[in-house]
Length: 362
Image (cartoon, helix red, strand yellow):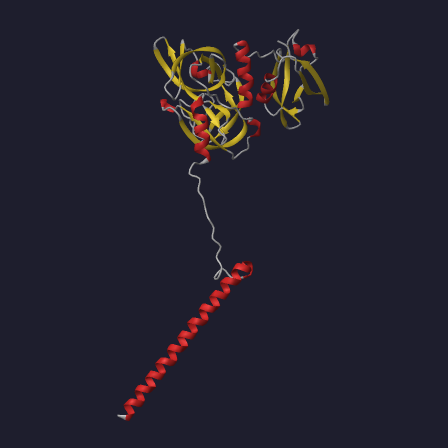
C-alpha cells in the first residue's frame, strides 16, 4: 500500500514539474514575441521578415488604357457606303476630322469612294446622310467627303506621326465586313515603310508610298478607318489598297502628318497639285564602282533638266543630301516637293561631284 502511494506521489510531482516547465516556456515565448514586436515597430529594417511584415494595399483599375482610348475615338469613325445609282457597290470606313458651323468633314480612302455616284455616311449612333465628295487623290489613296453637321459635336484629334516608335501599341478602328465600330490591337512594326502602289490598276507600280506598318489586323471594310495610339488620338488612316493581302500580320496606314497636308490641298483645290518634277529625263539603272546607280540616258530638248545642265551619262547620287538607293527613292523625293521649293540634285560626271539646283514649278 505504501509503495502504491509513493508511486502516485512521484507521478503527481512529475506531471506538475513538466506542466510548470511548459507554462514557463510558453510565458517566455510570449514575452519574447511582445519584445520583438515592439522592436519591429521601432527598427523594422533590421529585423527578419519572420517577425515583421509590412502591410501592402493593392488597387486595380478595371478600365484599361486600351478600352479608354477606343471609347475616346470610336464615335469619330464612320461607315462609308459607295453607291452607283441605287446599287450599293461597297463599304469602307472614314474619320470625322473637322467641324464647321454647318458641316462635318470626313477623310477616307480614295478607293472607298472611287466611281461612286453617291456616298452615304453612317455614324455608329445610326445617323445616316448623303455626303458631297470634295476631292480625292489616287496617289496617296485619300479622299474628303463633307456632310451636314446635324447633331455631330465631336471630331478626331490628330497626333504627330513623326513621334511614333517601333513597338508602340496602336489600335485599328473601322467597319470590317460591315461590322461597325470594330477595334483590333497591334504594334507599330515600322514607322517608315516604302510600299508599291498601283494607282491606275494596270498591275504596275506607279508610286511608292511612305506608310506606317502595323500588325493590327486591317481587313476589307477597315479601309479609311483610324489607327490610333493609346491616348485615343489618330496616327494614321488605314488602307487595304496598299496592304499585303496575301500576308497576315502586315497592315499599312497613311501617317497623319501626310494626311494633314493632303486633305488641306483637297479642301482648297479639290485635288492635290503635283508640280512638274524634272520631266524630260530618262533614267536607267547602271553599275558605278561596283554599286547600283541611276544614270541619265536621255535629256529632252527644252526640258527643265536641260535648263539646269543635266547631261546624258550623269549619275544621280543624292537629292537634298539624301542618298538615292533605288528608282523609287528618286520618284518619292521629287514628287513630294512643293511648288517653289529649291531641290539640290547631286550628280557624278566623269568622276566629279556636281550639285545642280532646280526650282519646282507647275
